[in-house]
Amino acid sequence: MKKRISTEATKSVRCAIYTRKSTEEGLEQEFNSLDAQRESAEAFIVSQRHEGWQAVAESYDDGGFTGGNMERPALKRLLAHIKAGKIDCVIVYKVDRLSRSLMDFARIIEIFDSQRVSFVSVTQQFNTATSMGRLVLNVLLSFAQFEREMISERVRDKVAASRRRGKWSGGMPLLGYTVENTKLLVDEIEATSVRQMFELYLEHQSLLPTVRELNRRGWTTKRWVTKKGDRRGGRVFTRNALYKLLTNVTYIGKIKYKDETHVGEHAAIVPVELFNRVQTNLKRNGQSGGTLVRNKHSALLKGLLHCKSCGCGMTHSFSCKGNKRYRYYVCGTAMQRGWSECPAPSVPAGEIERFVVEQIRTIGEDPALLKQTTIDVQQRKPCRVRAIKRRTEVAGSSDAR
Image (tube, rainbow, N blue to C red):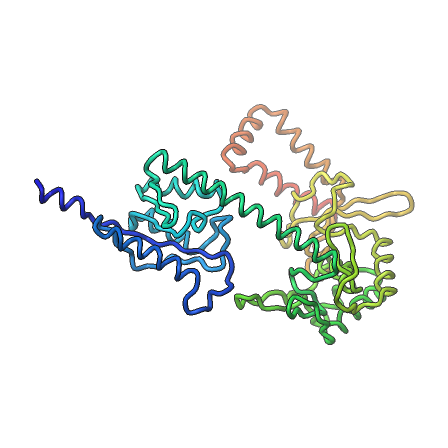
């Protein structure tokens, strides 16, 4: 009897050590923060060796990942191994190393409980199997989340103060500049290209012809390499990309923060007179700002129609002749890159909208069809909607012709 009790008392407990650091700063050191966290956890496991605790060989280290979400590779791997029954206990240096979000932490603990996995914090010892342990855990996590929110507020305030003083506070690199020691420095070769883009727009008096000329020359958006070594940018220009470049006040030596504009510390690469002429022309042409445009013309099918030729979403547009406005739905590819990329014709907005409304009215007048459509929607299998869409594309193409 005594022998059996001794065997049960020394049952092996497989312990996984999870470590995390929010930034990559200092991780290149021989002994970094992750190593310190792991060493403390290993020492704790040794102190519990009489209970059969043993550290698993695999490491679960997330260096450079925030605790505000669960998008962390080592955490995902840890949870997968827990679900596979490979771990009996998870050990962290502090609770906020596992998560700084109450909602995420609740999800993680739920996974632990379902697999009967215990959780231990080296510096804040408690047992999650007891109600008191859970209370202490939730209190500690509440403070961790509060600290994260305070840090976010301080960062936002710092960015706002930096922008108001004209400092570059980070973000995607701009064509025409390089970033060194958090300062914008002029890249003379790219700066020349940027000035020519402004001049080309004034020459062509429209975004699409300018985009075609830029693509003919082989000019692309800014290329850069991230801190992790990933290559970004270098894409062909679209109308929206060109519009954002032409309206960026950074090129005249200013910094924008929300609705405020301040004089920047960096050098301008576009003359103010040239920049203002471009803005006047853009305003005259009615450019509305790409993705931020509101549906002010009541385009009923905005975001719903797709081009039959290339599958791209169709954009609502209009033209004016005298006092009359003509509305159309135009292929997004043709709108951004020109009709040489997609020859699909534009579709009169009024006609295609009336056609779709009639199809919907037909569904409402037929009880059997309405019932089936309701079932399709509830089951997230909109067969009837797809059928209407196909008929809409066919009718739209025939109407345009």
